[in-house]
Length: 123
Image (cartoon, rainbow, N blue to C red; front, side):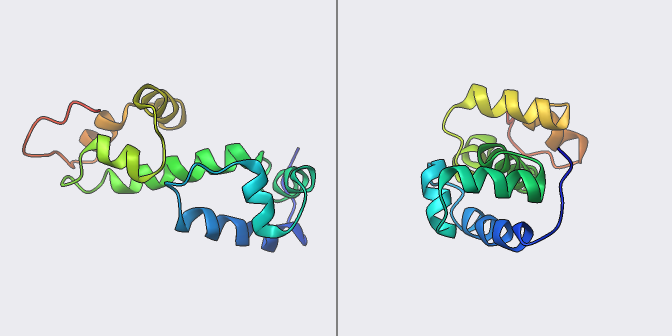
């Protein structure tokens, strides 16, 4: 489904602001729907229309984008970044990050010249 920009866009934008403000939270689809005052099914339709993704995919993408930005700071360990963006499992974080960016979080940091003083082996 190709994303459209209509009344769904501003509503999903409101959700994205709420998610961004609390990425560490273990969001459920029901909690996300409550932010907009809609049903779970309506939230799924709004997200599909506005961004071409499910609410869970939207949240995952936002977390990975936030992690990529945080990786530019060599003073923050990868494990801390994982926690800050709300991804509990280290292996899922590394796998999802690699799927999205083509490299592990540590390789991503290294490629951007953001090496740490101590060896940061990932997680």
